Amino acid sequence: MYDKFYLSTWVIALCFTFSYFIIPFIVGVCLLIRQTTENIEYKKRYGQWDDIHNNIILKELELASRTNEAERKEKEIKKLTSEISDYQKKISMLKEDLISEETQNLANSLDYSSFDSYTSEECKNELALLQQDEKELIKAGDAVQVTSSQGKKQTNDNSKQILRCFNAECDNIVLSISIKNIDSLRTKLTKSYDTLNKIFEVDGVSLSKQLLEYKLKELTLLYAFEVKRKQELELQKAIKEQMLEEERVRRELEKRKSEIEKDQKQFSNEVSKLMKYLQKTENDIEKQLYADKIRELEEKIKTLESEKADVINREQNAKAGFVYIISNIGSFGENIFKIGMTRRLEPMDRIKELSSASVPFEFDVHAMIFSEDAPALESSLHQHFDSCRVNKINPRKEFFNVSINEIEEYVTENYNDTVEFTKIPIAKEYRDTQALYGGEDFE
Image (cartoon, rainbow, N blue to C red; front, side):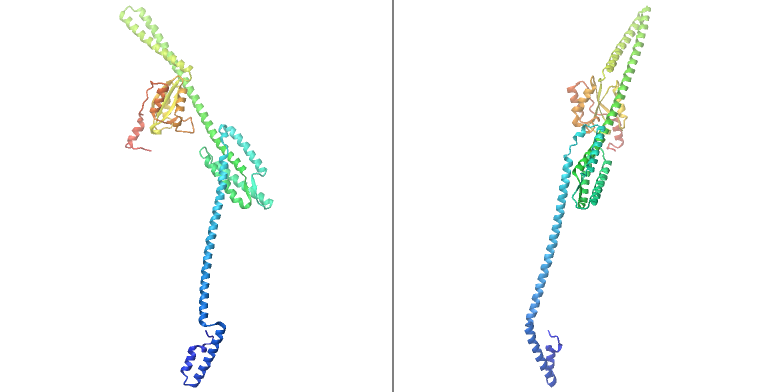
């Protein structure tokens, strides 16, 4: 409390302790008077020491309270700042979702069905026209929307940059196009559109929706071109195979007709010879033998005439043939049947060809149905079991996931109730191979 130590109470008390000496007593009295004077002065200036001490404590408590309040306010400010930041992020995400949703709605609203009826050449021509329209859109300055107040040069540079980026993205997407991934590529293109618009938002430029529409249609046309080209190649292949099959059938019929005529001529010559022998001989036993032989040959000639008539009928009637029901459980599994047709005189030749064409096991025949109009019967079966097709995209693939009982029921009720069906496939090669693996499935 005192600036000078000699005014302290303990110093004055020490002086009075030695009061029997005159000088310490006088010094003690002087110091006491000085202390009392200063106490009076301090009291006038600051009040009582206890009051000062209490005021100091109160002020310290008030300072601590205000410090705590400041810290609490600071925490609240930080919390509110964090909440504001979170809300801003949510608002930004909602805006992005809204923009993405609008973009996706645009992509979904476009009508692509008109391309379904195009040929590959028409798709190519339409694509060229659409690309020309896109160039005109860019040239007119409608491909990019400008909201920036920057200089013309800076704005033009930003517009060119965003167009270059979008075109590069679209080119990369087009390179990976196939007949299976069109939906994912459309989504990828629209996401690229949204991303670039977000990146260049600070520069005040964005891609127009009309440009996105052009790009989506171009992508769809390229997809349609790939699909149509594949279909046309498959059609050409099928036509070529059909022509080869028809030529093979024609040669087979000609060959069989020639063989029948040769056999007829041979049997007729033999009959003529036997008739001469019959007329010359006088032996009754020989006559009987010759007569029996002649009757046998005449029966063979009649059979050949019937076969020849059938061959001629097959030549004249291009629709006559066999519809076959076959399976290959080793290659395709249970209840998968191929329903096809052949005009071969020996339909099993066609089955053997199929068994040797890129399948590990032989086909089993469940039914072989002769029809004067085999294409109509085959088409009827295909249409009836259309919902059971294994390949829903390519109707030329003639495999169906259906039970043999259903096929038999339809054939017997609608076409021929005398056809014999084999219910259980032999699958000899498959079963023998399975036996080598201890009866377990193998890969």
